[in-house]
Image (cartoon, rainbow, N blue to C red; front, top):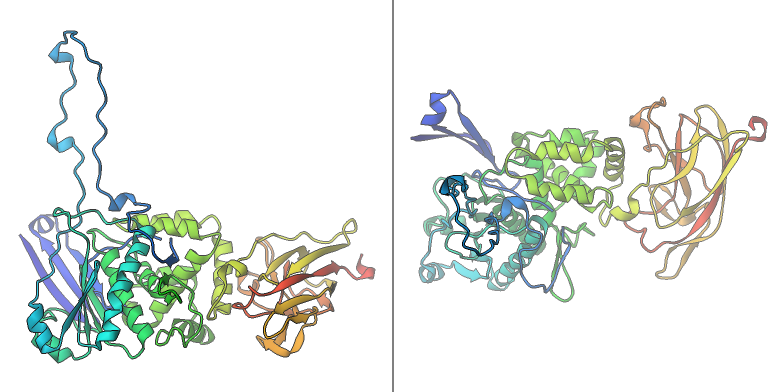
Length: 525
C-alpha cells in the first residue's frame, strides 16, 4: 500500500510517497517537484544533446540512446542439421521467462479526452498536429502556427536525445497543451486540474502542459517549446538529472529562429533583444555579474531546486548548456550526458567528462560570462590554450601573427612578474565589409569603439600557469592596451594572450592579421 502526502511552498510542491515496503525499512522517498521558471509539477523524466537546424527532414529515430530504446532479444544462433543422438542431461537448460530481456515501453498515454465541439462553442478551439494537440482561446492565426513548431522540435529532440521507446499500443507520442488567455474560461471548462499548483508562466505534467498567453510572439513560441521539451525529456520514469540540466536544456532548445523559408532552427544563440522579445536571459546574466553575483560552474551545478523560484537560475542554467554545447572542445562530451538522465549517474558522468581539463574549462567559462552578448560566436571565441615559455639569452624575442577573426590567442611567451617587455605590432586588417571595408592597423580606429577601446586595437591579457603566483582570479580578466607598440612591465607571471579588439558577435566578418614581436629591453637581454 502506498500513501501520498503533499506540502506546498511558494511556487513548488513537495510530494512524500511512502509504501509498506519503505515503512518496513524506515525509508521515505521525497520527490521535489517545483516550478522551474516554468513550474514543473510532477515527477517526470529528461534526455541528452545535437542538431541546430531542423528543416524538411524525414522523421526517424536517429542516434538512439540506450535508455530510450526497447531492449532487443539476442539473435538466435544457427545450428547444423543432423541426426546425432544427444543426452538430454548434458544439454543446457532452456532460458526461463525471467531471464529473457524484456522490451522497454514508454508509459501509457493518460491524457483525458475532451468534447472538442463543446469547447469550441465556449471559445476554446483545438489546433492539432502529429505531436501536439493545442487547446487555446487566443487568436486563430497565431494559434494555427504553433503545433508545426512542436513537430519540428520533436525531430531535434530525437536527433539529440534519441527516440522514446514505443508504447504498448504502438501509438505515436503526442502531447496536449493548454495555452490560456482567460483562465476562468479554462477552469470552468474543466481543463485546469484542481490539483495543478498555481503557475506564473507554465507547468507540465507527463505529456500535458499548461501555459499563459504571452505579450510577444517570440516568447509565446519559446515558452511553448520550453514546456514541451520538459514533457519529452521527463516522460520516461526514473529521470534524476539535476535541475540545472533539465531547465537549462528546456531553455536551450526553446531559443529558436524562424528562417526565411519557414523552417525553424533550435538551440541558437539569440541575436538581439528585438528578435527574441520577452526572453531577457543575457541581460539577467550580465546584471548578475556586474552585481558580483556571477556563478562559477561549481556553484551553478550545486544549485538546489528551491533556488529556481526566481528567474536568475534559469538564465545561468541556459548559459551553461549553451556554453558547453556550442563550444568546439566541450560539445561532444556534453552531448553524451543526455544518455545518463535516468538513474543517478549524471553527476558522476559530468565529473568524469570535465575533471581532467577543469582549469581550462573554468577559465573559458569566466571569459564567456564576462563577454556574453547577443550573437556571441562560441567557435571564434574558443581559446587554444598554449602555455608560454620565458624569453632567454638564446631566445631574446619571439614573433607571431594574430588573426583578426579570433578571440584570445596565445603569444607563446611567458612574461615574468616585474620584468619589462617591448611589444611591437604591424600590419593591416579588415573589421567589416559594410557599408564599406573598415581597414585598421594595430592602434585601432577611433570612430568606433567596443568595450570603451578603439575597434581593432591590439590588446592583451595574462593567464597564470599552474604553479605560478597570481592565482586564477586574475587570470585573463584584466585587459592590457598595447596598440602599435608598448613597454610593458608584467604585473604577474603568466602567458601573454593577444587579440584585436572587436565585439564578440562581430568576429565573423573580420579578415587579415597583424605581426607581433615580443622582446626584452636591450639592457635586460
